[in-house]
Length: 286
Length: 44
Image (cartoon, one colour):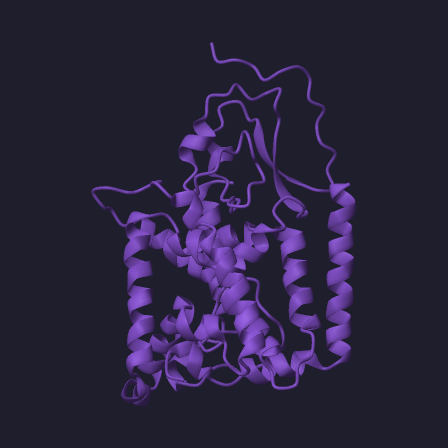
């Protein structure tokens, strides 16, 4: 899939996540029946145009309710999204991921692809998922810790909502200042580092990554066609080597490796497809 | 084996959603999503 098609799909996904545009003018958030359903991407339900419910916010809300009930519905939807698409959702459907893609297009004299400790920092998102999204909301009722202290999508929604209803500006205090700092750091870092929030902090990406190896939609490498040129690893902005690990936890299925592969060894596939037979060893580069 | 796991996950997710719907959990999701979340936007 070329970059233009991906850009078009991402734009469409943002629009579908935020289709109730009248909220920008009325200052009220959407309350259509579609909000019964969680959207696959990270999109705060307090965004004036949000059409669906945020899966992470809904999960915390269910876990932190006074009368605990196992969150069958939200968890079922999350597992369904993960089992079908894995982190394809991050690469193609997530509005906050798309925002970071756009930020990374801003020219900067030095873009950082990787650095010392990068792979360890990527583990933070699993800690965020476990501690802020699951454990703390279970222990401290009615407090969505991730939304309250970290989520940049919510802060962005707050800013958009405040422009629609300027009375909200008077209510912003120290907590908003904290969240605005986090949003600012993430947005600035997004100009230099590709998708810093997705790589290091996003609990939704962490959850979907667990399904990357078993999801219906996946990547496949034909080892017999691969010449080991590492063009795919060189182009991957998420720091994955697709020829060695096409279904890495970090792969967001952006497809840039598929585009640059000189011998067509990498391709999108589905779990229902039969894997092509691998004959012989990997070809060597002459 | 992976295919089986994929199919099993989809079936499990469908069962979980069905059980959640029977318990009226979509209404709870709606109740939260249709009102402004003060914590989310940095006020609460």
